[in-house]
Every structure is written in structure tokens, then in C-alpha cells.
Image (cartoon, one colour):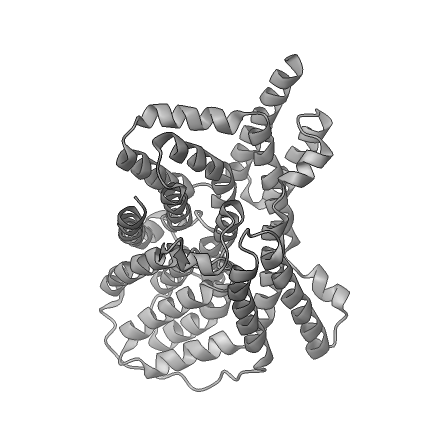
Length: 426
């Protein structure tokens, strides 16, 4: 009995300490998560076998494989070429800015958010220099658009991958799940409504400008690889209905093909390209899985679920609302990945208590956690990168400048998606 109590206490202390340090030292999050896992193992709060079992290896396969494919897709210059094309086809600058934000959102549904910002930012900065306008609002629009649309598909962003892995959802399930419209349509409705918010901020730019056709597509091969990966993931929906490991294997295979292609075109060794991968985020994700796994194994997830259920009572709408907007508020200041990993099992348990579809709370949780980061400049990695790029250009983004756009954008998109999920899944 004492051993169980000690394991419970150690797992909770390690998790809470790690979470606080994630907030205080965001640049050291991987080191913090790895040290947390080491402490759990040293104090025997979790065994090595339990730690390995806590990691969702299918999600890890999807993440790593998609990251490699996205990298060669970005280097092909296809996204930048599309952005340039959009600017030249738009009737004026305000519409060009909106289209660029929409393009960032579209790319982000298939490419990690930070990579999306890095793809689209050069076009945005080029446009603002030609117009001699402040690029801050436009870059904020790109970052928050990419964060929103990252939740639309299984491969859009780590939170989507986490939900897919936990709920055993396939790529196709994000579009239609159990015969009903899925999370994709909730996100798109939110994107459509939030577009009006962005239009309000950019409607004053009525002049017309054309960018010189500077971007050239280096190769169509990366676009073909990405397209085939998406098709194969959609097909896996029918072959692996239990979301076992097929999606992760598919992404790893296409990631391997992308590594070979990248090595061939850049005349580099495969080992060099492997070293360049985002291992920092990869190990961070693995560490988070284990930290939260220790909470589950020691019974804390059940206790948290019981507390929330008791606080909510039997009112389903209040329970759903609390989970969505609590997620929005917390994700504005803390990393949504550990939050989502910790809260997904809680949402499942609460849904059992309320006797409702677990999808209602899980989808609401994903919406809140993914979009809530749009409120502040530190709420999402894409925001931090966008602000960093602006700083290099000599522009400092203040908290209130970001929140001025991020807050109304978040409220508009969350409320639209929140209502959609409620009426479809209640």
C-alpha cells in the first residue's frame, strides 16, 4: 500500500514540477521532460516496460514521417510559388493578405505549423516591404491561421495526432466519423467565421500590387510524395480500422523516401539529413507520453475525472462548455501538447459519467487546446517563430498587439466550432 502511495505522490510531484518548468523555461522543455522521466524511473514510480508502453508509437511514426515530408515540400518552393500566384491574382492588397492567411491555413492542414510559417513568411515580408507597411498584423494573421487549420486533419499538428492516436481515429475519420461530420468541418467553419475578423483588420489596404515572378518550383517530386502519403493515409482508414500502427508505418515509409530524395538532390549523406530532423520535439513528445502515463497508472487521471464530474454535475452542456473554454484559457499560456495528453483520458472518463458521446468532449478539447494558443504570442510555437522573424526585421511584437488580433480571432473561431460540435455530437 505504501509503495502505491509513494508512486502516486512521486508521479504527481514530477508532473506538476515539469509543467511549471515548461511555462518558466519553454526553451528547455525537452530536457525537462526527459529529466522528469528519469526521476520516475529512478524512484520506481513507473517501470521501464510501462514507460515504453505509455508512448504512442503510432503517433510518433506519424509525427516523424510527416516532418521529413514537410521539409522537402518546403524546399521544393511549391508553397512559396502558390503564395506569389495568389498575391498577383488578388483584386487588391487586403484580399491578397487574406488569401495568404488562407493559404497558410491550407498548408498547415498537411504541414506542421512552424514549417508553414517559415514557408509563407518570406512572401508576406516581401509584400509588406513593397507596400511600405508594418508587417506585424500580417505575420500574426499567418501564424494564427496556421494554428487553427492544424487541427483540421490527422497530420496537421501534434495535438491532432494525439487525438487520433488516443481515440484510434484514422485520417478519413477527421472528415466523417461514425456517419457524422468530423472535426475537419468544425475547424473549417471556425476558419470561415474568423476570416471576417481578419478582413476587419486588413480592409484598409485597397491598393493593388503585383510581385515579380521570382519563385520557381525546384521539383514536383515532393508535392507528389506528399499527395501520395495523404492518399495512403486515407486508404489506411479502411485497412486499419483500429488505428493500430499502419498510419505511423505509412508516414515513416514516405519519410524514408523523402530522406532519400533529399540526400540525392542535395548531395548529402542520409545521416546528415537525419541529424537535421526535429529530434527536440520528438523526444519532448515521448517524454510527455510517459509523464502522463505515470498519472494514469497511479490513478490520478481517474481522481481528476471524478473531481471534474462531481463539479459539473449532470448538466452535459455546462460540462462541455467548461472543458472547451478551460482549454482555450490554459492553452493561451501553456503548451497544448502536455495539456492535451493529460486531458484526453479525463475527457473520456467525464463523458462516461455524463453518459454522452466521448467525441463531444474530445473534439471540444482539441478545438479549445489548438485554437486557444492564438490569444498570446507565447501560446503556440508558430506564434513564437513569427514574432522571432519580425524581430529580425526590426519589429517588436507586444503582448497587447498580438492579443488585439488573436483574441477576437480565437473567440470567433472557437465559438463557431464549439457550436458546430455541440449540435452534431451532443
